[in-house]
Amino acid sequence: MDYYLRALTEKDRDMIYDWRNSESIRVNMFNDQPIPYEAHCQWFDAVLKNESRFYRLFLYKDKPLGLVSFKEMNHQNQTCTWGFYIGEPDAPKGSGTIMGALALDYAFYQLDMRKIIGMVLSFNKRSERFHHKLGFCQEGLFKKEWNRNGQFIDIIRLALFKEDWEKQKEKLNFHFITEE
Image 1 (cartoon, rainbow, N blue to C red):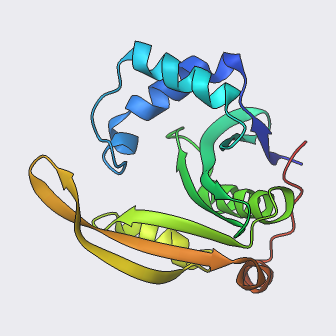
Image 2 (cartoon, rainbow, N blue to C red):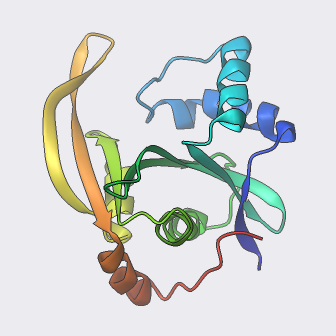
């Protein structure tokens, strides 16, 4: 398979540091400030050791393109939040949608979640459209929830249930295996 997800390894540290600090990624993150390398290394080491958060590298023909994460795992309720980005500016067209589909399959079938939650800063219309394309529905709007540089920003909460993903995946015509 040309596109796939894999677990992070130590060799991914610097590449992900560069992605996390690129302006195009940072502008849409909750924390939009540059990340010092030492802080990134501490975060990365914690990610590699943490068994309650799942980070997966997204690759095309063995070339890393992006990152997906699943956090705030609630196994009793089978819910989690997710995050994602394409880090490579020259990623093939459509890679984001494929990454999202692989990631959702991974969450629903490998992590055994029944509901995935996305939190989007309201100005990030591209991410909001992306969620809707994958079948997410808006569950809530947190007015003036996040302070960025003295300005309060709304946060949109979206969610996707496993049974709705099944239907949406058929519409998108995706059938994947999530891990090599």
